Amino acid sequence: MASPPGVPRLPPHDTRTPALSVVDMHTGGEPLRIVLAGCPEVVGPTLLAKQRYMRQHLDHVRRRLMFEPRGHRDMYGAVLVPSELPGAHLGVLFLHNEGYSSMCGHAVLALGRFALDFGLVPAPPAGAREALVNIHCPCGLVAAFVECEGGRSGGPVRFHSVPAFALATDLLVDVPGHGKVVVDIAYGGAFYAFVSAEKLGLDVCSTKTRDLMDAASAVTEAVKAQFKINHPDSEDLAFLYGTILTDGKDAYSEEPTTNICVFADEQVDRSPTGSGVTARIALQYYKGLLELNQTRAFKSSATGSVFTGKAVREVKCGDFKAVIVEVSGQAHYTGTANFIVEDDDPLRDGFLLK
Image (cartoon, rainbow, N blue to C red; front, side, top):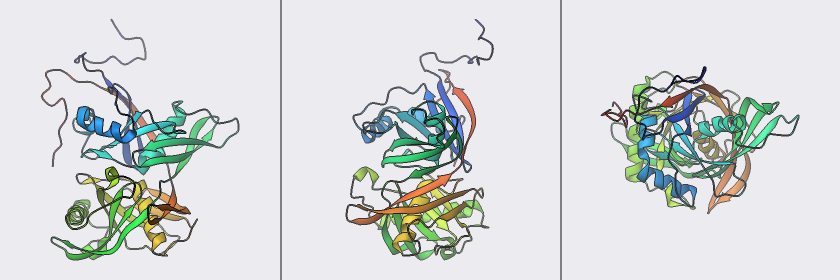
């Protein structure tokens, strides 16, 4: 039977495997593939338990959507799940080329628009210029504020982070091929190592991306081998997600400061990195380089896209002096797709080229 007009007809596929329906977006050039339908139920009493369940039982969904031929090694994804937290509008599991993340700022900025436009949150009152979307991420509850008009998303989205803090500063790390390098480590929903690219003999604005990737990956592996990451709330959060190379311009300026983030399995963020901006602001605030409510702009060396951020208030995270950080950026829709599997496809679960 032919499909009704306007309804796409799916090609022949394994009918035992539901089609994965997605909405694709990007924030500052960094992709986000949001699963609308087709993912089996993700079981667990808490969001972190759901993440463990998906890793153990449904990882083929991640691989099919992130890996080639349906994705690529720098694809990023989100699976929406119910949240156990009072006040949360939705829960989310973040997907990437290596596995799962505790936080993703560019995804939160996109999901704010998505949640409003797809009716996952109550419509804002008539005349409201902003809608609140409470998103339960594995790191905790994040509040997104979505510019809107007539109940639809419009301009930029901003979010308020979980408590962000500096874990270690001026840490001397032996990086193969680079010798002793001074590294800072900070948390913005995920942990990052921060290094001025100049200390590695590189320029974050002009060096080839491949060389920046190699250097950042070397720093990540060195820090993992030589420094123990800990988080006061949960061992599930105690891991180094990646390294952010900067232009070294940490002191406050009205001019944007440029960085590039390399995370997971050498995945390169096209945006300035929302959780990375959060962590970097916490680090600058800790060092006395930034005051409360002092806005800075952060530019991606990959695409030139810009996020802004500021520390809005002091809080505590365990024994750490922490801050809540506001990050703002613009997300855009790019399309929709239905992905299917043929039962005789030897590459049905995807592959990655190194």
